[in-house]
Structure formats: C-alpha cells, structure tokens
Image (tube, rainbow, N blue to C red; front, side):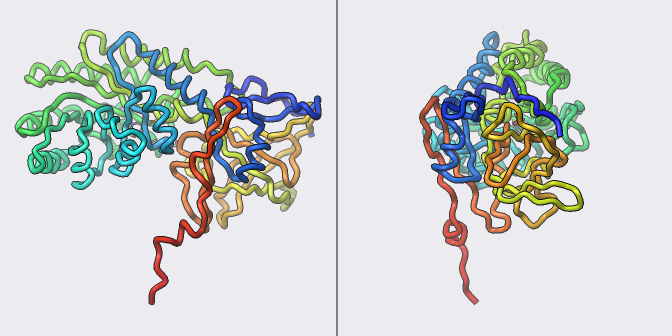
Length: 438
Ligand code: LLP
C-alpha cells in the first residue's frame, strides 16, 4: 500500500474543501455544497451538475469564436435535461438535435428556440421532418439523396421552406475511439465531397429547399485540433466550388467533437483550449464570409457533472478486491462501451490515506458492469461515497433501465443552492406503459 497523492487542481466544479468538523479531513463538494449532504438528501446513485461550470464553459466556447459570425448549437444528445437546455437557451445558445424527440425537448425548454436549431442525423423520419418544418428550424443537415427527396416532398406538402446543408464526409482521420469516429469514407455518415456537388444540384431543383450550408462532423472526444483544421480546409475549398456552381452558401456547420481531459486532475484550461480549437477551425474560413455553426456537447457539459455512488459491499475474489457500488452500467455505460476512463475519487479524503487496488463494479449481472479495473484508490470501505467524475456528458442521456433499475435523479447546483431537475425514476414509472394481458 502506498500513500495517496492528493487529487489537487480538479476543475472548479468539484473541489475538495476542508471539513469544518474534522479539520484534517477534506470533503468533495459540488461548488460550495458538500456531496455527502446531497447523497443524504437525494440518495444514490445521483447525478450532480455544476450550473456555473456549464455557464462558464459555454461562455468560454462562445467567446473563443468572437472574431467570426457564429452560433453555438449545443449538442442535445450529450445531456438533454430540460433545465440544462433552458439554462443554455437563456444564454442564447442554439441546439444541435438528432431526433424529433430532442426537438420536442428543446421546444419544451424554450418554445422560441426553434430558429436556433440544426437537425443532424442519418435517419430522419417523415414525422420528424414535419415537426421540424412546422417549427421553423434554422437548418436541416442532410446525408443522402433519398433524404433530400423525402424532405423536399414533406416541405412542399406543408408549404414550408427549409434551409439545407449537406453533411459532407471529408475523409479525415481523427484519433478517438472507433465507435465515435465518423469522418472517414467507410463510416455511415455524410456524403463524400465528390458526390456532394451533384446533391446540391438536386437540392436546388426543389422549390421549397434552399442549399444554404455545408456541414461536417468528424467524430467525438478528439483532443488534437489538427483534424478539425484539415476537415475545415476541405470544406472551405468545397464552398468555393459550390459558389462557382451558383449556390449561395451562407453557413458552415463545423459539428462537435472537441475532447475533454478524462485522465488525472486537470486544472481548468478550457478557455485556452477552446481558443486553439477556434483558431484551427476559423482559419480556413477567413475569406468566406459565412456564419459558422458549432455543435459542442461534451466540452460544455462533461466536466460539469459527476455520478455520486455509495459502496454497498467490499469483496475479495482470488486476491482481487472489488468495490460493489450502487451505480451500474445502466447509469453510466461509457467505461464498458468505449473502455472509457473516468476518474473516481472519494467524497471523504483523509490527508494520509493509504491506497489499494480495486475493481469498481456495479450490481448488474454482466462482467462488463464496471467503472474501473485495477484502479488505485484511497482505501475505501462499505458505506463510503465515491464520485465518478466528468460524467455530465453521455451519462444520463444514455442511461437505461437494464435489470429494471430505475434511472438516477439529477440535481443542479449553483453556489450553495441545489435544485432537483429530475426526480428518481420508480419501477411504477417503468411499468406504467406496459400491459400484463394474456
Ligand atoms: N454533432 C454531431 C453531428 C454529432 O454526431 C455529435 C456527437 C456532436 C455534434 C457532439 O459531439 P461532442 O462535442 O459531444 O463530442 N456516446 C459517446 C459520444 C457519441 C457522440 C455522438 N455524436 C461517448 O460517450 O463518448
């Protein structure tokens, strides 16, 4: 056993502050609220978000693009809680949606936000298109000839005009997990640039469609900015071609994908990172006079959230130590789905804590139900609270009811205030829409 290193310098959302009752101990907080208080009040597992972190990250991202006309369209799939959407909408954020359901959520959060919505996705259905057409969204990002035909058909039926961008596939490799890399020719996404030119001609033939933009999204959790710049250079060149064909291209949608630092304690250098990202994206577009659309998800909300969980049991099998916690893969699937790393830290931290090596696992009947394997943590006992960090993005939004587990509640902290923004689901909620006929 070794002495633990103090996880100093966590981003400001989840600081360790001295425990006023036991001076030597430090307690993990969300902003100014001790997490053990939240666990007592709302139970565990529990998603906790820092409101000021969401706001400051959004503002930093937005400010990074100051030098170019732009609209940040927060990617709803990362975290679609209504209070999060409302908070962002109040800051005039737009939204990137990929389903009619996400559009309905945005409209519930702010019925005036439709004009700031871009609709991406490879498989839009006619009812989803109808809802988006009636709502008057900003842009449809289309991905195939058949989709263009269907959209043209729905638009003329409804007599609604639609702005359209073709999502091009730039054939750029970006280092990330293969499941979330999207910008290569072999992926299902987008239209190869060489073929896209013809698709713009098709769009221009339809009375209710207007070819107004080019969109691109090369993947998610991309930590080096080079591939973004490469993709934008290809898009910029293509805009030149489209303009020479007579299309009036006013928008470029750069997609999302800026990664965050999941490993190790990281001081918050997000404003600088956002700036570097903004420079590499905007540079190739400098002369084009377009409005830039951006679709960040993870980089806004990821580090603002943690999943709070309590250790149910400690057990030892074949010399291996397991911490069985009350959260599971249904609550946060990233570790098992993408072999993703999330820092796990104790809520109560003793200054001289010894460490041990654990597998942190959930109660679900799958060996893949884990949050960490062979992880060195301060010695942890039954009943103790752990926080799984950087869980604000693609945590709750992918949570499921597997093993008939009810999804956790979500709370939003602002300073010393806390609001329950989604209550704990119950089994009654789950079975309400089922029938026991036969
Ligand atoms: N725009 C489009 C068209 C997208 O497909 C995505 C993410 C985004 C924007 C937002 O990307 P972000 O800024 O959040 O990287 N579940 C995975 C991530 C899937 C991303 C899907 N598309 C994970 O937990 O890592």
